Length: 242
Image (tube, rainbow, N blue to C red; front, side, top):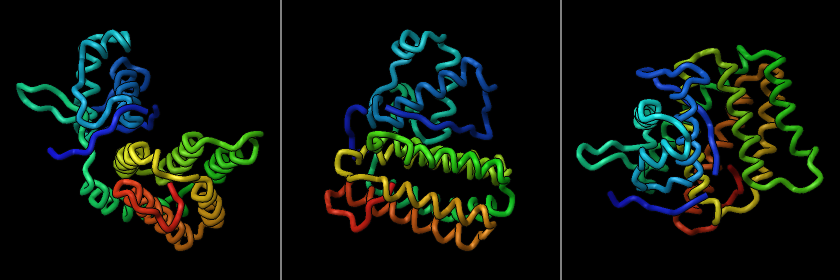
């Protein structure tokens, strides 16, 4: 499959697909979130075999919720089921980067336009609270802490669009992007400047300025792609982003 592989790292986001939805808090949902965390954070490395017996012991869950979780993750392109061979973590390939962001860029800009029109001041207060964590810490945040803030901001925007189909697609794409970020982490610099871009997004959202919000989001996503690509091919990136 010519997939790039790399061992270990730790993290999560959440998503649903249209074919299978577990109830929040169900055993299937617990299994899904736990396994997804391991895949996105590279604790389960690209190309690794999924050992269902190990997962049952580690997560203290039965075979059925594990298999239901793996079905969802297969729909989200995070695992591959190979008949008579087993289930594997999806590999990371250079071509994935272009295809992923080809899909993500227009959907993220559409989402923030809709969020500017439909979002509530309460949602923007939540986003402001998430961003305030950057200034409140006594010590500099790690890149992983900053990425958690980034994830929170994007999730608030996705919630604000009021469209579950678009929301679930975006959450899935974000998780795939986050896995690329973890893969490239050792080659990337400080991402704090990029997190600060969310402040400009927030100001545009509060003013319901959809054009301005979409422009900032487009720049944000393009910069992320440039940074990841530079890290994956081993060349310096012109702009630090997430």
